[in-house]
Structures are given as structure tokens and as C-alpha cells.
Image 1 (cartoon, rainbow over the protein chains, first blue to last red):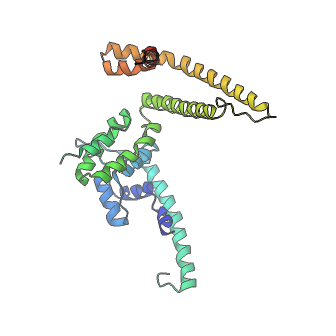
Image 2: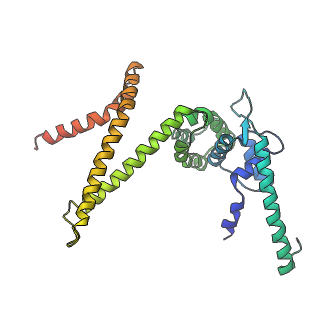
Image 3: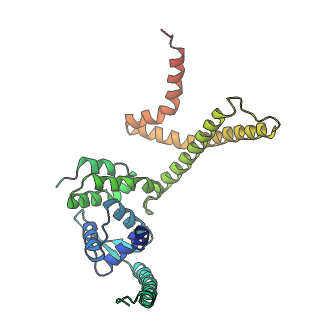
Length: 108
Length: 165
């Protein structure tokens, strides 16, 4: 059950969140997601997500002489991330409030 | 650091357009990560969906993906149908008192033959185009692959004519 609950960590969302502050290349995204969000993305998953996000215009590649091409979030990607973050924030808020009532959870 | 052969082999499973667009980046990432069987497996695991959704900007790749999807779907369905027919109709299994089953088999046979004809006729111009191009560009391996549908049945016929020892 815990594993199923971990599905909130949707890889496209993690990648968008990682790119929200500055452009990054693949390895930097993997490191950032692991350090700040505690999720380890595999190389295959990362590039499947990058291809999907790029096709939907949510991220875009930057010019690079190196093979490590950086990506940046687009305006559409930032808006999509903001909408999803708002929804998650609402869910988190409700969950904290109700857990506080039910269990006297200190995090409420 | 050079990525392991396993990782490069996994990358070879992707469609050419996908490799052209992301191949170098993935190899660079695997070099940074250190590669390993797990990394190669993760790359290989994502190869199949990549065939069905190539990069949007590559129109020929999308056309190839559409054709490959249609052909694979048709082949799987036709193959399953033939297996089903082999297991039932050709074994003489007919439920007594249900003549509509025979009609159902007749409909299946006609549909299979028609779809095979449509697939063959529809693919013929493309096949000829690819064959001509492979010969013009002197790619013998591609030429042999493209001639397989013609050569394989002839080879099978010759084998059946071969005198038994």
C-alpha cells in the first residue's frame, strides 16, 4: 500500500519541478531529484519523460556544444507545474488537517 | 568513462530517429552515472514505447511508427486467429447443432484473406520504393531483409522437394 501511495511522485512532475529554477542536463536532473525529492530516476525513465515533456511543449532543449544538453521549463510547463502543485498543496492541507484531528498529529 | 557495451546494446533497441535525437545524451548520462546492468535494463525497458511515439518533429519517423504499429497489430491478430483455427477448425472440432459456427469460420477466413490482400497491396509500393533505394545505395543487408518475404517461401518449397535420406 505504501508503494502505491508513492505514485504521487509522478516522474514528469519531478522533472518539471527540478527544472523550475534553472536549466539542467540529464545527470543534474537525476541528482537534483534524488537530493531534494528523495526519488531516484533511472536513465530510461528520465529520457522517456524528457521526450514526452518536450513533445508536449512543457520543456525545451537549449543549444549546447556538449553531449550533455540542458533543458529548461517553458511557460506552458511552468503553468502546468503551478496548477499541479496547487492541487497537491490542497490535498496535503486536507490530509494534515484531518490527521491532526484524528491522531493529534504534531505536523498539523 | 566509456559506457558499458550492455548500455550501448540497450540503446540500439530504440528507433533510429529517437537515437539520433537523444542517443548521445543518454550515453553521456550513462557515462556520468557509471552505467551498469540496472541502468542498461532501464534504458532497454523503455525502448518498445519509443517505437510507438517517436519525436514529434520527425515526420518520416512518425510515418514509420504508424506503419509498424498497423503491421504488428495485424500480424498479431492474424497469427492468433490462425492458431485458434488450427486448434479448433482444422482439428475437426465442431459443436453439433450449431451451424452458425461454420459461418463464423467462413467470415474469419474471408476477412483474413481480404486483410492480407489489402496489407499486401497497400505495402507493395512502399516495399518497392525501399527495395529500389537499398539497391541504389548498395545496402546488401537491407536488400536481403526486404527480399525475405519472397525468398523464404521459395526456400521452404525447395526444402520440401529435397529427397528424404
